Length: 294
Image 1 (cartoon, rainbow, N blue to C red):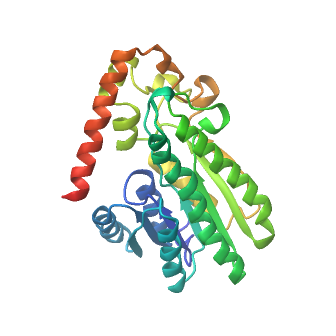
Image 2 (image 1 turned 30 degrees about the horizontal axis):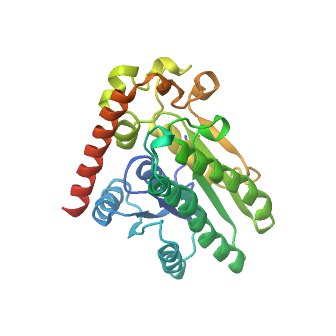
Image 3 (image 1 turned 30 degrees about the vertical axis):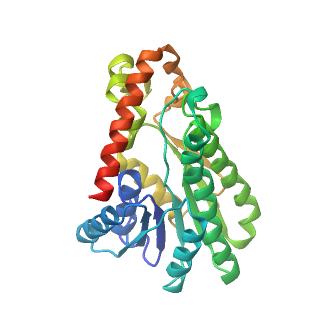
C-alpha cells in the first residue's frame, strides 16, 4: 500500500527487534528504504535476524546486543548509533509479560517487567530525544503498548501499570517535545501471532480450559496479521502524517471494546489451574535460558 522508497533516508531503531513484532516492523521499514538498527539481549538471535532481513530486503540493518534494563548501556549504545549518523525514528517494542495472580508476585517479579517496559522505554526515549533536541533534529517515536492502558490488566498488573505509563509518556512528550519537531505516538495491538503470547500469556493448560484467545472474542472474527501492524507503524514513521502526535491507536479488531481485551476471564481459574500454568511458564523460561547459553 506504500510507494517504493517511502522511507529512503530514514534510520530507525527498533528495540526487541530480533523476533516477533519487532522483527516484522524492522523488515517493513527496510523494504521501504529505511536503514534499521535492532536491539535485544540475545546477540546471536539479533545477528541472525539482521542477516535474514538484509537478504530479504537488500537494505541495511545493524544488530546491537543491548539490555535496556541498563540505563548506562542504553546511553552508550545510543551514542554509538548517533556517531555513525543520527536516528530519525525510534520504535519502543521491547517488552516482557506473564500471567499471575497479583498477590503471588514478588518485588523481583514486578521489576522484571517494569525494568524493561517502563524504565527501559523511558531511558531509550530520553537517550534519543536529548540528542535530537541538542542537534536541532526532528524525530518520530512509536511505542508499542496494549489496550489495557484504558481498562487495566487483571493478572498482568506489572505490564498494565508499565504500559499505562508508556502511554502517559507518549502523550506528555507529544506536548513537551512538539516544539522541537519530535512526534510521539503509540500503537496498542490486540492478538497477533507471536511465540511470547502463546507460551507466556496463553500456555497449553490455560488454553485448554478457557478456549484460548479465540477469534470469537473479536468483532472482526480473526487475529491480526503482522503486515497490518507493519502498515500502521510505517504510516506513523512516514512523512505523510506530520500533524499526528500524542495518539494511542488500537489495532485489535475492536476486541477491547467488547471484551476488555485483557485476561479478566481468568478469575474462573482455581489454585490447581494456576499451579499448572506456573509449571508451563517455568518450562518455557528454562528452554529460553538454555537457548541463550547454547
